[in-house]
Length: 396
Image 1 (cartoon, rainbow, N blue to C red):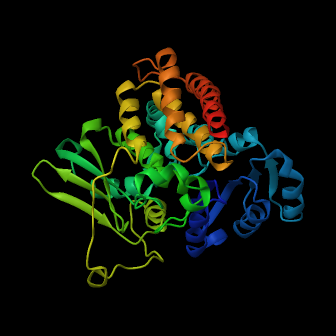
Image 2 (cartoon, rainbow, N blue to C red):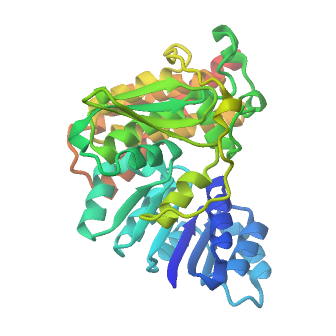
Image 3 (cartoon, one colour):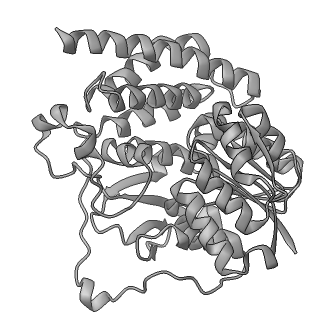
């Protein structure tokens, strides 16, 4: 019986993982070690009961009494807080889903890798902030990283049986988000509700806003460089409104391999769960005759400045990824709480990079967790300062 853990179980990726685990036999087929979530205690407890988890952990310590009450009599241990999540990752498991959103997913992922199992990585921020450290940790412990972002799973699958040296280009597709067809001058006035109206995907609030701003795709560009070891100039981004092609890999003979599928995260999750085999999945099958047309267009960097900024981050290397991600998270927080406008998010990130990078981002891939956490902390302080300035201007 394979042992599993799901970090970020109550988010959209976690829910899809839970669905596939249940369909594959649930507690009869898997021994569930740990489930973690944020504040949705009722759902976390329900999942833990169904899978008979050893421990369920909520990130918010104030929710612990409610979690204990919800798990009373189940035999599932309840815990809360960042330290408890890290301790849950210290429990060995054969297969771990890393689906915590943001930099908070880094420490659990690093700890899980030390057991030498498989880490199914949906937490792109881990590779953005600490790519070399994550890859080195996996190598040192004989662990395997499998990508769960739909784009990177598609690339991974297109490379099966191929030599990475024969790859000429990797093309990441992007939906363009909810505001992709808005007039450029109107973007500054976009509201949170408008940015959340994604035309193709049903995702969490934060990732949906990141899709609209294309910060999500910017993170994925960096993730591609870190995971596959290609150079930045080999990575391209194209707007594909239908979201049916998840990524493409171009080879030196001119051939391009494309991965197509319905916009359903269970494609990538199921591939990682069953790898190296393929198993039947409950996802829609494409009717190409009905689809008829697939469309593409180049991204406008004025509309999506995040794509320009990620190129600067890759050129700087070192701790630039940690700074970029931390600033992005603070900027997103401020947009969600109404402090800054939609286009101000890129301004906060750019200002933070300009102020922090000269001080902390040395051109080296040798970094420690302490280095990364220090850069993350300083970037959050500087990003909050930049956001406060922009908020003040909006108020006047």
